[in-house]
Length: 308
Image (cartoon, rainbow, N blue to C red; front, side, top):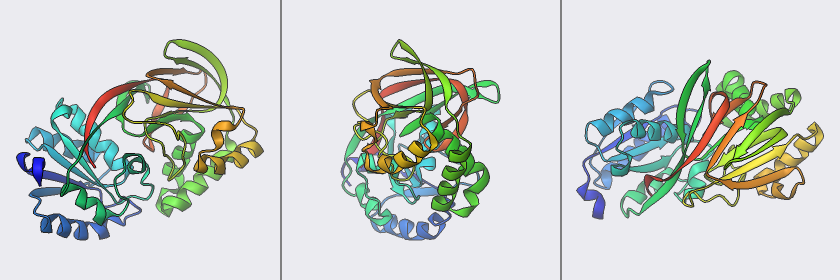
């Protein structure tokens, strides 16, 4: 297996509830394939939200230098935060076997969607070093900080995540997302925000602000089609307040990546963004609901080693 042979034994972190519970059924196949490939590994099953952070932190502290994520984008998000907590990110490789539903991050990175094909990446390891994002924000009135791999957003998309996770998650990925979307569409209204984008301040009445490190989000939406996770910049998607009929009409365009021509859509490339609002605004990162504004986003260039 080339260079991976010089690494210590791998630690595989499995989120059995990812992909609406389908990961639990796929894991025995993945485990058999990894064993047949000769990969030396131990594995852990996550038991609750946030557990993958602890498991990844523990794995690296025990000396593992190859961590394998088996789950969805939320699992990747937690594992990367756990690795970062150890201060050893430069020495660790992450391999991704996607068993979630959205496959958003791996669409940009180029890892196969099929979980059995993704296992084969470990037989011909190619290292890719990519940027990460870090966001500082408020969680229940306290200052907090989190890394994200793919995207983070405020406004409409965060409200969809909030509705989906708090009210409909038990229904499965697609039904919960669609119900969250429709519920948010009914109740959403634009909010006055102050943006500082690489030092330039502007006030807007906004629908959403999204920091794209990868191209895709929301289960296949081509939200920031020109984003490059190796260029040291976010693609910042800003959508000013839209009428509800216009918002509904525009949503399918986001899946095709053709929304950028809309007159109320702006994309900027930036390394640092601050968002302020006098009104409460929810924040999500990698599809995980985190907290509220004020929020500050920064790019961490060349921060994560991936096997693809």
